[in-house]
Length: 123
Image (cartoon, rainbow, N blue to C red; front, side, top):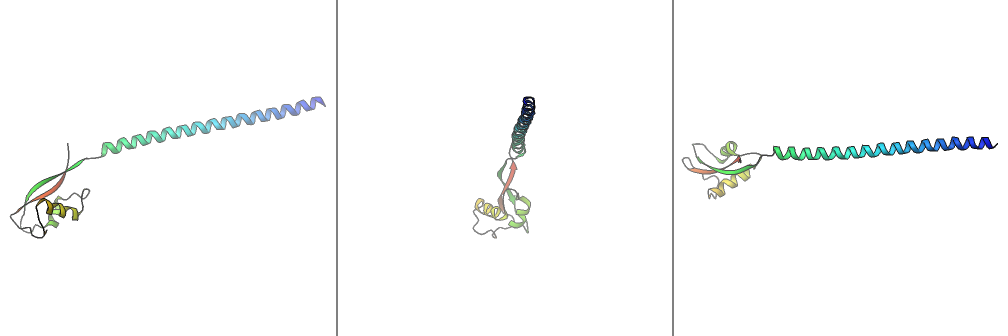
């Protein structure tokens, strides 16, 4: 009878030890996976920030003096000089009016000069 008890104890002890080892192995693998995921997230975030910073272009607003030709309107000038990324049509017209002291945008005439806002890449 004593011999049988030892055998049961040894079997249970071996099973528990194996289960603990397996649990420990699982925890280590999970921890390693989480650490690796965190490192990869940090590396990709830094890479995305440096790419975004390198690809951003700084544009500054400059003014060009333009001689108005027959048929020129603010709409035609807008399509030729306006940068869609920097300003809307209404902002363009407002900027032209304020730069040239125009109270009415329809009062431009052939032969006059207008200051037109132009966005250029700064060096």
